[in-house]
Amino acid sequence: MKKLILSIAAAVCAAALPLSLAGCKDGGDLVRINEVTHSVFYAPMYLAEALGYYEDEGFEVEFTNGGGADNTMAAVLSGSADVGFCGPEAALYVEIGGSSDSPKVFGQLTKRDGSFLVAREDIEDFDWSMLDGKQILAGRKGGVPAMTFEYVIDELGVNASLNYDVDFNYMTAAFESGIADFCTMFEPTASDYEAEGKGYIVASVGQQSGEIPYTCFTAKQSYIDKNPEKIEGLLRAVTRAIKYVTETDAATIAKYLAPYFDGTPESSIANSVQAYKDIDAWVDNMAMKESAFDRLQDVIENSGELERRVDFDDLILTDLADKVYKEVYES
Image 1 (cartoon, helix red, strand yellow):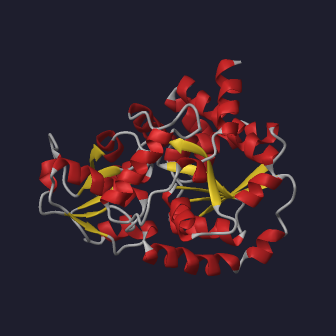
Image 2: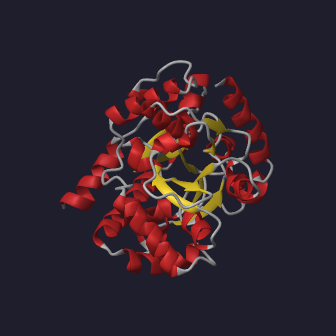
C-alpha cells in the first residue's frame, strides 16, 4: 500500500500544475468533478445534468477524466477538483496514511463491479474455471477493479495470473495488441469492442462478485464544511437521477446519454444501460452501509493491500445522503 500512497503523492504534484487555470472557473455556481473513468456505468451522474437536476440545485458541474482512482484522489487533494468520483479505497488509503484535511466519502453510486470479462474468442457456456492458467488484464494493483477480480477468482479457487503492468486507460489497447488472454472492460467499451469483432463478452464481474461499494463521491472535509449546500444538492440531483433510471426504459435513457458518449450509437448505449440494469448496478440510497464498508475492507485485505482497518465513522458520512433519500423516495 505504501507504493499506492506514493503514487497518489506523485499524482498530486501533476494535478497541481493546471490548478491556476482551473481556478478561474471555480465560481460559486460550479462543482468540479473528477471521475475515475468515463462510462455508462455512471449513467445517473450524467443524467442528473442532462435532466437539469444540478441546475435545480443552483450549480453547474464540470467533469474531468482522472484515468484511475489514484489520479482522481490526487486531483481532490491538490484542489484541482472539488469532488472525486472513484473507488472508496483511494480515500481509505489517504485516511490510513494520515492527513490534516482527509477526504471523506459522502455518497455511494454503484454497488457492484461494473466491468465485463472479454475473451478473444466466443465461448459458449463460459465457466470461471476456464481462467485457470490464463492471464487477465483486470486493472491497477490496489485498485478496486483488480482487487474485486482477485477476490472472485480466490473465492472460486481459480488459478489465474493478473497483469497489473498496464495503465487503466490503456488496457483495451493493450489487449487488442495481444497482451493477456482476457481483459475486463466497462460499458460501452465492452459492447463496442464486441461489435467491432475484436472480442466477446463472456461474463459480468459484478454479477459474480456480489455487492461491494464500488464507486463513490469524495471530497475534502474542508470543502464539505464550506459547501454543505452543494454536497446536499449533488446528492439530491444524483438520487433523483437514480430513481429516474429505475423507472425508465434503457432506450429513453440512451437518448439523454448520447451527448456524453460521442461516436457511440444510441443502440449501444441502450444495451449498456440495460446490462447494468440487469446486474442491479446502482444503489437507491446513496448512504453507504457499514456492512458494505466492512466487505470492501475484506476485499482489500484479501489482496494484501490493507495496513490496518479503518472505523466506518472516521471515513464515511451518511447523514445528508439519508436525508436526501427520504426526500426523494418517501415524500
